Image (cartoon, rainbow, N blue to C red; front, side, top):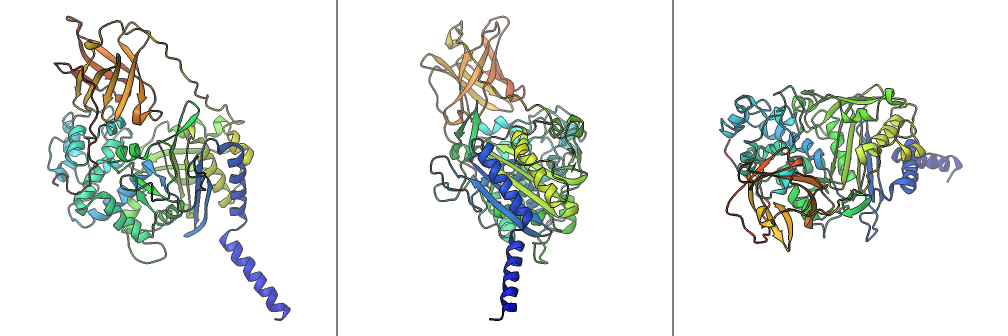
Length: 543
């Protein structure tokens, strides 16, 4: 073979190699490798990163292990729970299925969708005018009540609608931002009714399959024993504990903000769709109309004092700022380094995710990890570093700073220190507390005497009660059983009748002030919760 042909072949091979993984990708991978070894492997057993640019998948990398027992490496096909990023799929599904109905869109009122004029019993205004878009943009002014997910009787359709009906507004209608994932779950029921099938099957047929997301799945139906899944790990006082899949399956049963699982490879495909114009990437086939696709990213609610500004502002010492100013449909609008961004992040019991889109540059970055990432600091810093390189900006972060961030720019958030809870005598008969308690929002809970110790049981949640050193009837709630290490220690307060001094109610601090009224007669029998079946979906309530 002539020397000239050999040189041409060598140049072609070099070109093909660089087109697959260029200098930027090599630099990013080397940096993450160094960061992972030096400071993240003990905090994040598994980590994946995807980058798409100009309609191409330019980087999909995996780091670490699926679990700390087998030490099998994470792959590009390993599934991670997306948590709140599931809302993006819920919104796409609603837009796609509602397009088949002339009278249904995001501005259709919930009362018309459900044939219910009192869908919010505490608010005539919301009952009359609230729409699907109000749910998507969190404009109802109703504070989040995630502990409802502990109650397995709150299933899709009528049961969740019944609980939502009694929620009380804390903010102004369409003039406040109160993230509420339980309200968002209404989209699951609406999607199932519009599509006449289970939400998981609809997302699979309408989104996964057209986009070629061949490994994506759902926490509600996936089989961990036969599927490539990264084990979720939850941090509790500095130690990582594995999160039982049984818990994740039950917690995520309402799906719209919880149940989607994806690999880094499939999220690259989803990002290419989000950055497009509604067509299936690489084809002219329409998955979503151009208008419906654009509507996903319009600003529908304003954000005040976004948490990201606690660390990512120049006035706090950083070279550049990152902020969020508005909420679209399941994603925030903001600015980073003078560039427009669309961003969504979530933490769901040991799964931590971040998706960032730069629509003006056709750039998308997805990061997922297991373990701990307090205040989203590492994910956000890593996304900043990656985007700077692809946008041709001066990178202000490197391997050393990614490990130390937010230092040296500002003090790091204080480390969590284990709290001591001294043993305090209860001071009265245990029988006084034992019984069933009911709430119009939260349903039924019980307090039982278990071998001389009080236990609070709510759905799949069990908490050991220990009296605090106060004059009031305040108790610390220590999660145990299936939820041990997953939910922080909380406070429960019993209230006495001022005349009889009998226990009349209880209130859990994190239950958004929900009051449980004691029923009579009490019971001293130790109770166990009955596992309710996870809804298979389908028609739940009429439109």
